[in-house]
Length: 435
Image (cartoon, rainbow, N blue to C red):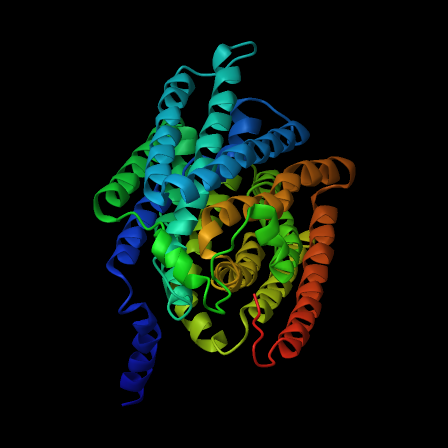
């Protein structure tokens, strides 16, 4: 009987995914396929250092340029998504992004040497891929928000997050072996997965852009998602707590992105040729933990305000990455990955919910372009900051700095939550509303 009750409680955690709009499930399956084919970026740092011969600082600077390349695509993609529709922008941009990886694979197959044109063209094509991916992201996020409500948004967003990690549980493990055996398939496999996922969206997900009638009707409500009459800047100024949340969130990117940059460098430095396989195993563990713990964590923390949960996630990120300053054994790398993955899950299932619930429906594409630009500064700075700290003081010092950054951000969110609650209390008098 006890075993049966435990089984019932386990499966009850997944009931939150029932009854969602059908297109949400299509997006889930598309995300699984896409996640299974994410081969290039988890191993891009090692590709730059081991295949192209860049040192840590040069690799960090290139990763910074990839982050910068994302920004113009995201800004334009968000505006196009609000004007012409989410689906056409997302599908078109993703197909273009996938096509760029085909010549990357051909050039990689030919090998690299000093002065080889392939060593120049492949990084340039990766930058082009990032630009097109930037076009697609605001449209994809706006599509998810359009299809959901405040009541089912956390469930829908967490399902999409599960889909990404279900695929990602497979992708890096395969890529870890392809890296040495057939590096050209890092690019070709990634391109095939994106093409298949995009085809699913093109065939089975309708256009989700709100109609003009829905936008006008929302103006008469007091919803925090109601449309805004005006441009992006004026809309953003009516959401000061959202903007503060995003700026604090930039520190999350600075810290979390080190799992793509500093962690593979550390595993390679400590364990030599076995480092790539260990890193791939850590990324697979990360994805598997997400599959197992996402639903239980949502159930355990669902009564908390989203911003409080995000603050908790930053604290776990601080501990998980901070301990790597002292880690020397593979077993402790797995312990670290468990801790920061718990933080990742909590952030991923709450941060976007907070943002979506504070975004005007008329500006979802544009907000989903500018918010990653603001928050993306942390991601953009993560590699040059990480590379320079490693170059000057070593990897352990980098992890101590990241601990301090994440812990400070956690405290900042708690203070922001208190300020927002005080503001809501002041505006809760009859006839007033809160955006």
